[in-house]
Length: 119
Image (tube, rainbow, N blue to C red; front, top):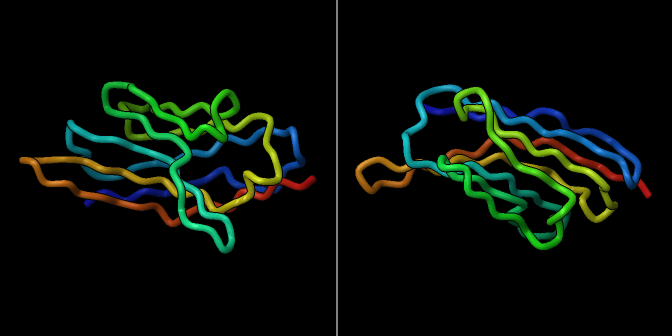
């Protein structure tokens, strides 16, 4: 069973940068998508960015041009480089894995890491 552990969150001033990391342990099926989601207080969880096993990426409009998602270590580590951070980026950031086998979706969430951007 896959487990996801995020790291790299913290407190940063507006305009600063952070890099989030999500380490996956266990076997990931060949067809998969990994993504970052975030949830601010009082708001719904929303997609930040995701990347497929083939390397295709998708970003929320609010982070395009500022955030970069990537994978390394045989695609078992998910990264999110966040630049030009804004106070509205403050949220708990979650890593998510969707992987498929024989047409069945298996979804795994990480525990989340707090990102706080001060103005």
